[in-house]
Image: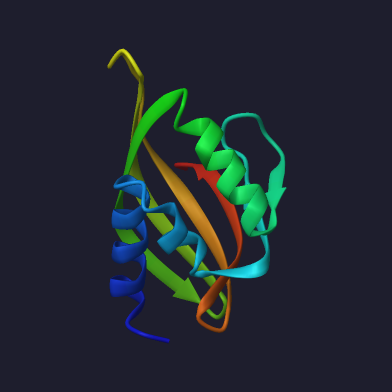
Length: 116
């Protein structure tokens, strides 16, 4: 796998600039992705794309990675997450953790956790 820091910096850049097909291309076909808006999970490339397409019609988010740690196939990323509604009203500005389960050089799973 390419440099871990570069991989995830590019991933977050592509998410923040809404190049979602580039982000989805980094996932396994059977990815399990946390639905941060409604709870539960979405599955496979189609589920992630539909979820993000719907999400982007309701909010504008920006997520910046601050710290990246890896232990075997689990990558934990401390992120600064800022979310506005479409009228630019701030909805949240917080530190959260993103957990990526890797399979080789692809993302097989994603979860979200609050800062301890």
